[in-house]
Image (cartoon, rainbow, N blue to C red; front, side):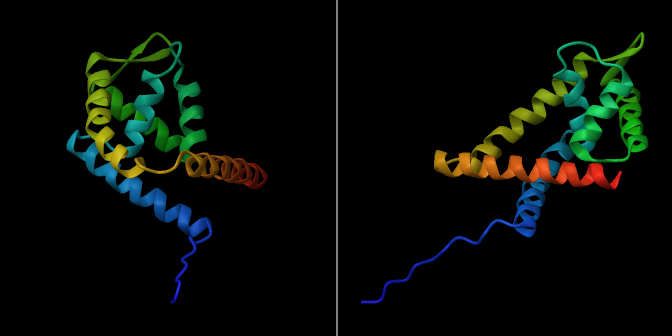
Length: 149
């Protein structure tokens, strides 16, 4: 009797990148149906989920911390959201409009079942281990970025 054992590939930068781009590709197709880009969705979500109104500078810093994108590009993204009336300037702060909240909610509702199919059925211990590894990779990569700045 022959027994075949398979071992899972070790997690590495390539595996992480492939998983990220596969999942992001799915999300970007959903977002495109709603007329919004990935960066616009991240920026809009930052405003919608803020506990208190945020200044544009605070929001640019927050989004830059997540996306590692050029601050000028992020400012342009906020300008696009303002032009589409998904955000409104209120004094020195940005606030979401009803249309902005509705668009974000609709995109989230459409992507939720897809996300459930991608993440569903994985053992809780595996997800916890992956979460710990990803948190450590994020921490270390952020430290390396800080050294390069």
